Length: 399
Image 1 (cartoon, rainbow, N blue to C red):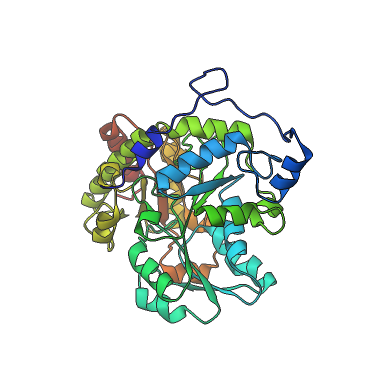
Image 2 (cartoon, one colour):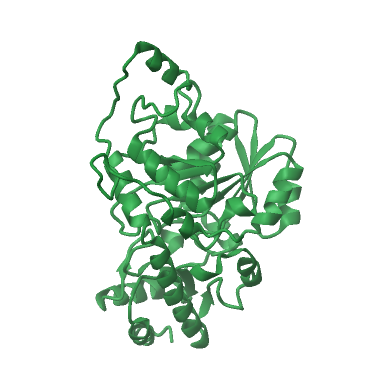
């Protein structure tokens, strides 16, 4: 039977302690034990169902983690205080001094900076490659490689990873495939395609209201236990903990994720087709012109579409800034980083979310000054949105 991620979320049933339809929020940093032996067993990791300290986990965080694990089809999950608070412990748990990572060259700027500038201090080095070329990926693997890292749909160039192909390479070389699925929740389920670990920034589409920062690691029970281990677990020791109130808030928003993703995708598809027909250089996985359109189609859960992210290239940073400022003045959205909000958000990644990547490397990967990244909102009248956007483009000379 085909994996239905929204059904898995819907089938979860949580009651509050007084019968509330929402689970009670565990507003405690520490938890009591009825016996000293149970406290000892919990420290040793041998007491299921007991809570120790909220940096380790809490009932509210476990509720959210369970829902996210069901969405991705993994055994369990661990939530964190941010997307980077999920990504960095995973890589540090899997790698030690002398180890090597092969990563996509087009990834979120913060992840790039961590791999390029921070992990070398720990003698963990990374080779950045064109993730769409499996032969190039395999050629970069060395005897010290431990991890293949990519994003399902890359930030900001919207390159699509062949997760099945990468999983086969990881298995062949005894590596772990870690996939950031932030851009494509529900649309793509990396664990079902062979990924070992799936991470998300919950800040984006999953929460959907740009009021919370969060992250999650979805994987096997053993790996999540390792991350939480009080002696050497990277999540436990680095302290990237999510607050219980935030976990509760995100869990409530997850219940509408399937509806929101369908609308984000429908609106993005409409605009992408219109922009391309107008002669704009448009990148969107749903367009037949996208080099990985067929690959995305082969991997996707069809009902959720091709996602809410698209890019256009208007030729120069000056034009991009002029257009974005005008669109904001016309209330078409906000000139802001991040994504997944109910309003459209737009930014020039080369000077914002990917600014950590040196200019020469941006050029090599095709990240141009005039590129605008759109996170398309939930507009009910997308036809009207397009007409006003088109007028803005004419005013600044893009069309």
